[in-house]
Image (cartoon, rainbow, N blue to C red):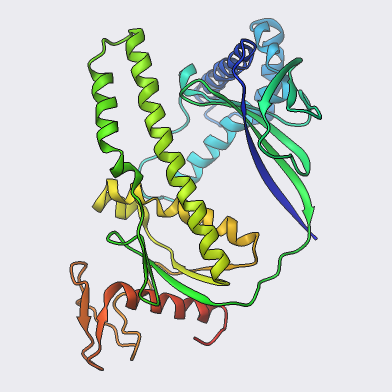
Length: 372
């Protein structure tokens, strides 16, 4: 048996009572900013990091005296905000200690419209048999697209830029172990010309949803820039712009899920390359972000884990493109512009992408100890 964590996302129906959840998110934003103030003050006075438990005790006193309106949110949600600040500081300290690439700033203040959620853990909510849920003493109706499976661990109330409220439910469930299945193996090379190049020579192209929606995006951006700052028309134009971006994101994610399910149903072993996508974004910019290879890989790994398919990542520094798959000799002078080349040892004419996919498959199978 294995323990599986599942996430369910439901949209809340529009209702006047939703203003109470909006208010709860605004209270969480105020607590976040108060925590940042206390962390900075504590460091200025004592030169040390403020422990999370000490801050929790302090906020418990503050919400009873200085800010009684915070009690409308619930103690567990308030503690979760403190834990979020603690995790943000820990990520900042780890970034500095490990000397990672790029500059990372410590947690800072957030505007209320930039803060989007609060989380309830063991208490403060109750799901009923129909599509109704009670959150902090008030009953709401949500769109129950599928049944909730397993024991509920947390409930997160999330607000998007359009003002829509979503319920994100995380559950824990005991399931039978999924064992690797027998089947074909495939090597896939990610490219800018073709989204995926398979080792059999076939290619999979991405719809590039961002590129396809450029005209619509430009019109939405123009509408925002032509409105007076602070006006209601500008707010309406910004919401329309966010709606366009949300539609692009949903289309891309839907396409990634369909492609991942198709590949997982066809292959038992999928070999891919671990790429430096941040470096690729600095070179090729928008197109790499539009292809969203990292999002596709995370979806592929999740789908594969539920179907018994193995996803193998080879090292990003492995010479998959420069090594000849016939004799194994490496061509150190191969440039990115060369889409095909001739091996100096065996004189084989090699297509760059297909050759890389074949090498990725062989390296992935070698990691599993399976002969190619």
